[in-house]
Image 1 (tube, one colour):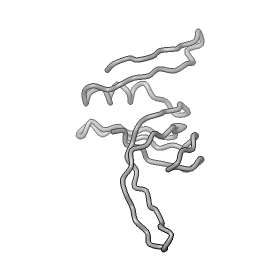
Image 2 (cartoon, rainbow, N blue to C red; image 1 turned 90 degrees about the vertical axis):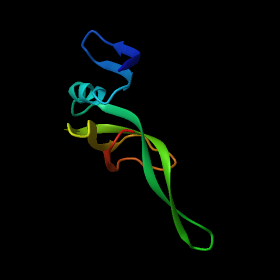
Image 3 (cartoon, rainbow, N blue to C red; image 1 turned 120 degrees about the horizontal axis):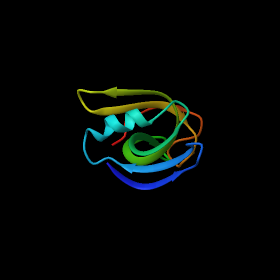
Image 4 (cartoon, rainbow, N blue to C red; image 1 turned 180 degrees about the vertical axis):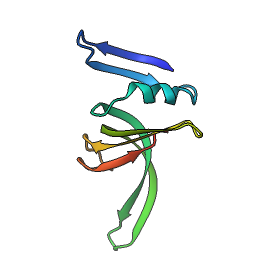
Amino acid sequence: MKLLHKDIEKDNAGQVTLVPEEAEDMWHTYNLLQVGDSLRASTIRKVQTESTTGSVGSSRVRTTLTLCVETIDFDSQACQLRVKGTNIEENQYVKGHLVYWFHPV
């Protein structure tokens, strides 16, 4: 795992920016995260759009979510981290205060 940024206070509060490089890095991230932490990561979401004629279409878009972590799960078979939380920063695809299961990609 690559550490891009670290800003830790004396009381152990702060933030880090990490980039996983191997599947095992998700295990380490799982052990670092705690309920109540904020997590920002890239994910893919299915977005529905409605045209002026009323027809509905959907597409997959890459977006960044920032969640307040509620639950954390690690799938050891797939080396996948699953985080459930409330979105705390709106963007053009996701409105605030919605609960998401988040699968970082």
